[in-house]
Image: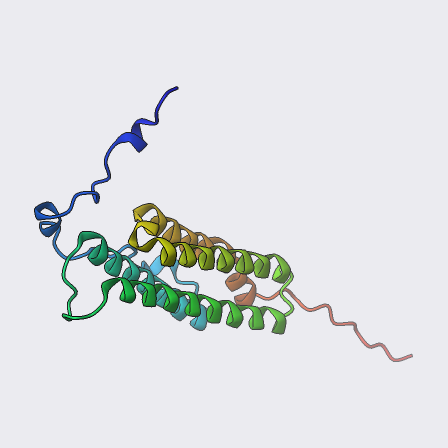
Length: 181
């Protein structure tokens, strides 16, 4: 049976101790770019906040994974990581609710599909949080963080971009013309 050569290689994050101390400050997982802006105020604000929360999770994960001392002594690093994940879940749910309210208000034709994706993504994220809570830091890794980032960017650049375009350029309303006899 052949082995996967990529999976067989040790993760660069697998080492601790002296090598971990040389890594320096955590790098952001996601640096927001202006070309990702949709020009719909609440959506852009929410998306930037989601990116910041992902970066917070990546930072807290690195602290826990590397065994580095927390910035404020006495704090529970795993507890801070879980709080960051729970905070992201709340923000995601609130963001989805705002989008869905707007979609209902404007009678967005892709509402059902968009909401279905919201429901699926939120359920998957809650399952991830439960797994991390049960497994501790071993339940979260760089691949999971990258998946979260890919989910956010995929949703923003595809699904939310279509909604934003609809909001900025609504289709012409078919208004019946009144013709008196």
